[in-house]
Length: 77
Image (tube, rainbow, N blue to C red; front, side, top):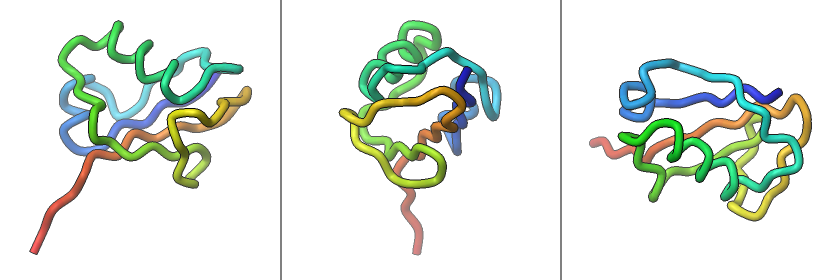
């Protein structure tokens, strides 16, 4: 199983700070599709993704026990 973390407005859309999903062997792109199918109100188009606190691309493979974070763009002044 994998822990999936959501930040900022993504947390609000999902209704949870984190969820557990089985994403072992899948790519980040595959996981995004799984999340979109489960949580229709989530928009993952411009989010950054991290695996175990290191930024990852859509092609990166998820391993058992990896923690994945979806981080939306942040603006500030």
